[in-house]
Length: 144
View 1 (cartoon, rainbow, N blue to C red):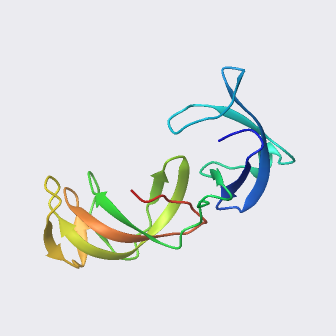
View 2 (view 1 turned 135 degrees about the vertical axis):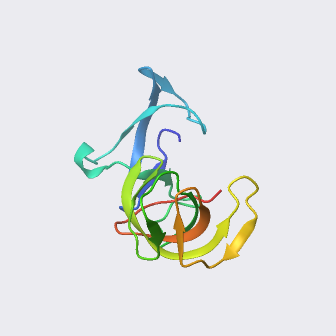
View 3 (view 1 turned 90 degrees about the vertical axis):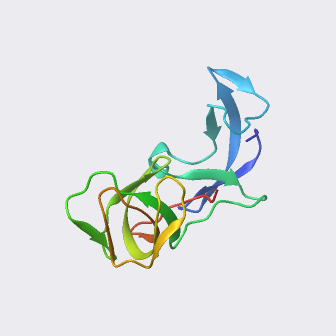
């Protein structure tokens, strides 16, 4: 992130120019991954930017909204069973969005990550699984 860089906020699609990048009220020439900074932008109100928005360079692989994503889920403490159609609230970075379990792909071992059962109907407390989640509102998720 540098001054005069054009950034896109996903998933809203707002684009704007960065006026300055600051750390503890001192201007910086650029911010690198892991830096905790504040930045000033042109012609965008604070009310237009929400929790969970991701700022990215418009010219170099900009962040996009996702339709669905595959997640490794570990059920720690939940009464009853979780199956396709269940919609818990998911915290992903600063986003706080309800996501629906579209499909449970496999039940996996919590420690090793090896598949225990392919496409189970449900999972319960203590289980870990790979599942396709579909956000109910626009959400930006990064791969790793």
